[in-house]
Length: 186
Image (tube, rainbow, N blue to C red; front, top):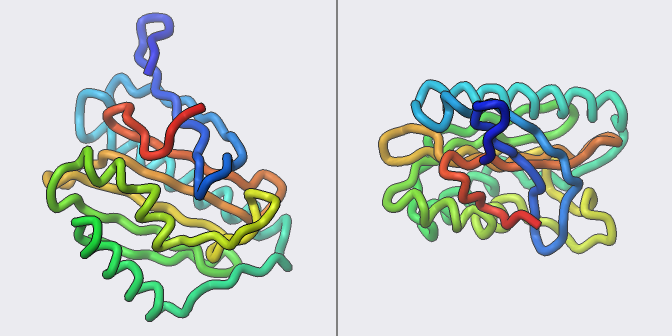
């Protein structure tokens, strides 16, 4: 976060998935309210979800023939339950968008420390949205998009990571209420 013209600004930026850097897409949000109250944080999440869904739609129009190796829903559910056990969270909701293929939107609640689960997000994503090795960071993903929101024990948003891999502007990003992002910034 930084201040500009007396307003606090939150920068949501480069998402590092797997080991390599994904397309950098910087999004700037006025987080004056978000940094101080739950309603503002929910507004930021709503904006991120809307932007993610819009990017999925654009990608579906731009690259309708691109194929992703979507696991069967039962396998995804099983993997998500395993991740919940291993990393100490409860699954609050799962919605699967279908711009062309599956693009899960998952909301989880920390059962213990929110700081711990936020730091575990890269490992959680590696388990529930694994990537096969490929030269291009936009290739090898199982889903054409993924959105993971983490809420604290009080139900308030604490972090989100998201990606969309279909189309020319494929990429992803992250947001964290505390400014301590799940993926390191470069």
